Figure 1 (tube, rainbow, N blue to C red):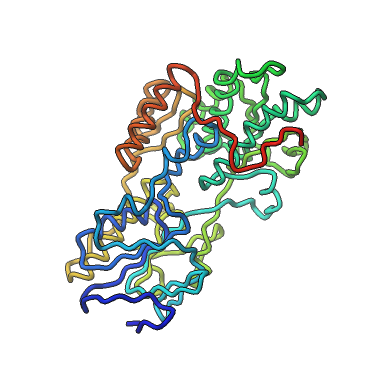
Figure 2: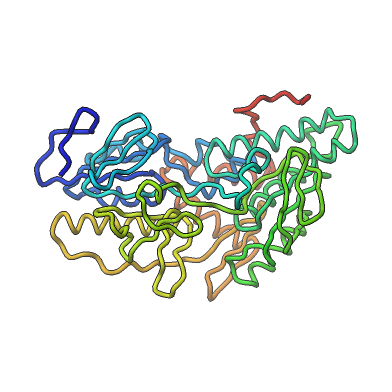
Length: 434
C-alpha cells in the first residue's frame, strides 16, 4: 500500500476500503463507477473535462442540429448521489505501476489499489499529422463547435465572395472516411444545405453546395452488412452527395484535398477516417497493437500491471470468436460494467463474474432527417422505421431526463420545420473576409 506524502492524495479511510481510480468519464468509466456504487471502495474519477459526453451525437453539434449542452452533462451532477465517488478535474501524464499511483500534469499523485483506464480514442491521420490543421476530426465538444463554425463560415464567406472559383471552393465540403460518422456527417451537411438554410442567403444558393464523401475502401459503412452498405450508398447519393470509393486521400492542404490523383478545391474538409488510442499504453509501458490500443487479458486486466484494467477504445480485447471488441459505446459500457463488478467481487471476497461476453445489439447509422440503416445481423431495417429505431436508441442512452427530453424535442422540431436551432458561430474568429 502506498503511503501518502505531500504530493499524494490522501484521506482518512477505513482499513478495508479499497481505492479505485477511474481515468476517463466516458461510457466505460461511468459504467464502472455505477457498478461500484454499493461497493466498499473509494472511487476517484479523473478527467480533463468536467462533463460526460455522448459522442455518437457530436456530428449533430457539428452540423447545428443540437447544442453542446444537449449531449453533455457535468460529471459531478451525474454522480452527486453516489457518496463513494470523488471527481478530479486534471489531465493524466502517466502511471507509476510500481508505486501504484496515477500522475497528473500538475504534479499530483493519486494512489490506487485498482485502476481502470477508459480514456477513449483520438484522431489518427496515418502518419500525416500535418493534415489535422486543415481537416479536423470530431472527438470532443471543442472539435464539434470548431467544425460547426467552419461549415457555417463557409456559407457566410461564399455570400460575400465575388470570384466564382473561390465561391465554388467555399461551397465544397469533403468528408474523409465513410464509416458511420462520415456517412452521418455527409447526410447532415446535405440536409443543412438543401433544406435548412435555403432561404437564409440572398447572393448564393446553399443547395448548390458540393458534398463529397471519400472512402479508401470498396464501400460505405464497411462494418455493416453489404445490403445495409448498398442501401446507405443509395440514400446518400439520392441526397446529392458524391461518393468516391476505392480511392485514398493522398494530400490535404489549405486549398483543398487530393483524392487519388484528383485535386478538389475545398475550404472545408472533415476527417472521419481513422482513430488511434490515447497514450495509455505509454503510461503503462504495456504491449499495444498498431492502433496504440493496450493488449488486455480476458478480464480486461493488463499483463504485468497488478490491479490495472483497460476498457473501451483504448483496449485491444480479443473475443472468443477471434475478432476484436468494436470501438462503440455499447461495448465500452458493457466492458466498464464488467470490470466494476469484477473489482467489487474481489474487494468483498465473492466469486468473480463469468467471463465477459459482448452482447451485440446491432449497428445503426442515420442518413438525413428520416432515413437510417439498422443492422441486427439476421435482420435489417431501412428508411423511416430505421430512423425511428435509431432515434429511440440514442435518446435512451443519453444521460439525464432533461437531455432526453430536449434532444427528442429538438429532433421533432427539426423534422417538422426543417430548421436547426444551433446555427451559432462561436469559438473562432468569425471574420468573413479572410
